[in-house]
Image 1 (cartoon, rainbow, N blue to C red):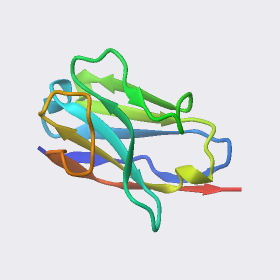
Image 2 (tube, rainbow, N blue to C red; image 1 turned 120 degrees about the horizontal axis):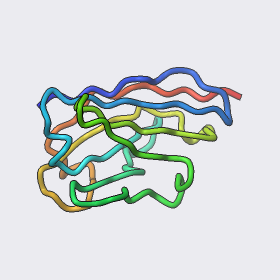
Image 3 (cartoon, rainbow, N blue to C red; image 1 turned 30 degrees about the vertical axis):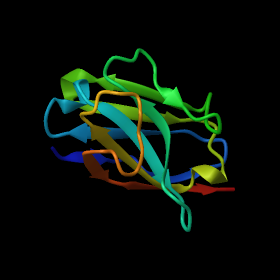
Length: 123
């Protein structure tokens, strides 16, 4: 499986961005999906995670209300919508998936990782 996150770029504080993550197969329907981010000098974290049986994702308190998940099964693509951006959102953002089926995403448990996309936030 190949995953590819895209859509990064330069955004002003308060702006929004939608990051697509496309898969080379239909695994996004059946796998747990995580959106991760890693700011420079910081540990990679998973602000959003959703299992295939969940109706809604688990979203970290630090980004709740600003990070939104959606999917387009016909396009084998999922999306992360980031709204009201702040400097903490400046990072390389990754999508990843695991076939474990539970609603848990961490740096060591994902089976497939996409190449990240850089998001820069300006004042």
